[in-house]
Image 1 (cartoon, rainbow, N blue to C red):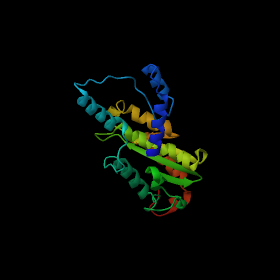
Image 2 (tube, helix red, strand yellow):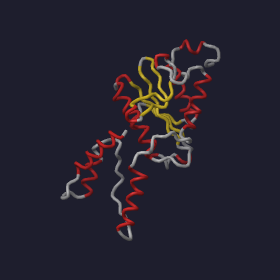
Image 3 (spheres, helix red, strand yellow):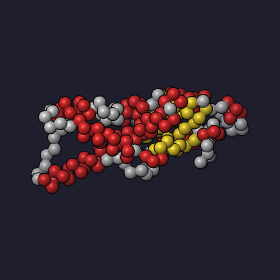
Image 4 (cartoon, rainbow, N blue to C red):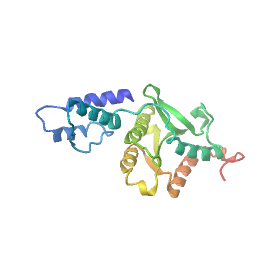
Length: 226
């Protein structure tokens, strides 16, 4: 994660030339990396230099600096719901299980040097890698959607684009979908398929996609899918 940020940071610095209008620099930045989505130029009002520096720090903290690598309680809610169903169907692997079991694995390491893990993964022919995004909680920063998207992007880089199917799964209240459209769009840009866990039809489509990727013999076990 940090190496990716440093690379993009250097690219941004390389686009700056004092003689070029700010609008043109912004257009250049938009072409550097798909994770960057410029929203236009803005203005900062400050009473003095100290106030200016405080405002800059606030902007960096909320929009630029990556979130600390820690488990967010609200984010685990969608994972808990998915895992509960998969466990009931006897297709959720035990903790620390290998992909070779052909069951669904949680927290698959994608790139430990960057602290990147996939929420769910399944190997059966192609490697199915899923990133989840819970937008039902009070605070869901765009940086969280960016991190989930980077996991999918990194998975195709590490395991091979042709060998990986990337999946995005998000949950959002119907009346909040418009507010979180940037988050959903960003995740969708890196997912081969994206599902709304809060929509009954898409909820079932996601589960069907997972069931279809699991060896049929697992469903013959007691307690398996009906």
